[in-house]
Length: 397
Ligand code: URA
Ligand code: ZN
Image (cartoon, rainbow, N blue to C red; front, side):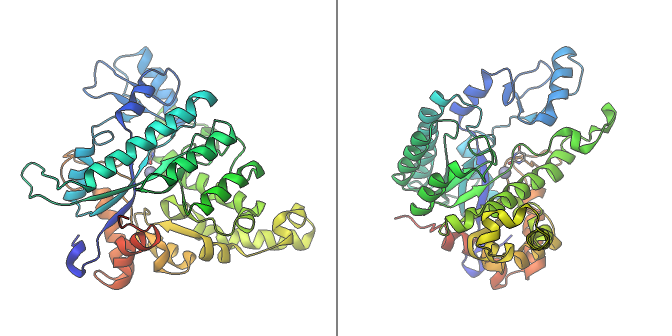
């Protein structure tokens, strides 16, 4: 990737970290999400997903069983590794976010103070990095910039959540929030979230909507132990469907009409939304006509089409790994000016294992953008970085 040939920086808007303080919390837990060490593994294991539970139970009973979850490499926790990854892949600016499941599992009293601590840590990482020229072993000094998406204490009372938003507005490198799909416990179409969405919109903090819960394992059907296929079904299919369902529910509840200034960036190019938006639209239309429940909803009364909402209030990341997916995302979003490059670092490390080498997951996404939009041309440059700089105001104030 040659990002600076035409002078536009490459910006990674989908890149995660777990600060060591967050890992300490996970290490003390005995239900997911958790971090465990196993005698047969040099690195602790990060166990986040319901789909990882059967393997966790087997490994706890049988030391020779395959290890559960994924290795907790230092790419998850170390700023130096994040910067080295950026350097290696020519990424000039990263917008960091805490990875899933964020603070979803904390008690109502813990959530507020921990959100404040985590958001302050992210701000400090950005501030120190942006004021320093980085010297990495065997690499020339370079300048990498960081911004971040904050985290909300969603299990805390609404007043604490609103205070967390106010706190984020005081952090100079915060450019939005990362949000899962559970909301306050009843999804993102819950009317109780409207004051929070309004506060985010007023503060010009877009929501980076990211999956975690996937689909219940039963959705994939009964199977033998060998038929579980590791992370493929939950991550390739469960994650994108979760995002699609969440955004469809927001649309049906009229959230976008209720808060017209709200902006969302959808992870993984909107899940399956570019492909299914037409079907959602058709089902709403027919439901309204045929007297189904759709006619009584907010949607039925003040209707903008899914396509209009996509083009007016939604951006998509370009973490879709294929030319076909990038083309569909551009079409659905209404233009290449609404798509933004991301890597999902550090969840998809190099297949051959050299963590400091090239990550195929990055190459696949860069190649998809360059093949779909034309290597070096303006649209590809916009997706690789220009859009993020414009939409997220990635200049220091
Ligand atoms: N990517 C993420 O961001 N989270 C996961 O749990 C897996 C992949
Ligand atoms: Zn991610």
